[in-house]
Image (cartoon, rainbow, N blue to C red):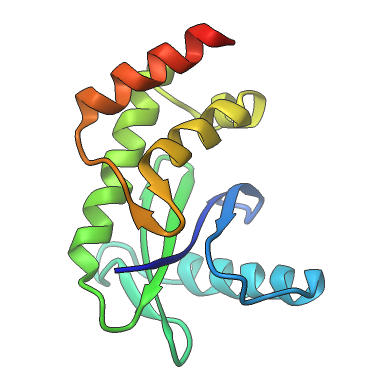
Length: 147
């Protein structure tokens, strides 16, 4: 299992978090175009009647979930199991919610370094590192006290 990238953007398409695990784009303009394509594809879908999985390219499938005004998206390999990644998106949001105390977009905007800290505790090099919410919150509270 390998995650190619993790994106978080709002309903207007403004990127709030982004982490690339595979160096597939070296050109900044191509990377921006790819993010715009992902936003257009996901925001145009009917979230009540369509799944949270969509094929994006020859080698990438998007797994996404919308929470309030934010979309959380993972780009994964086509052959990977989508439900695993969907559950990890949910865990990521749960941990953010517990860490920030009812997380909202402004928490991510003004404390982006803490949101990246949460992401880095869960995902390293495109691999899932930790799946225990309690362990994550314990480690994050220790790291937060070091600040």
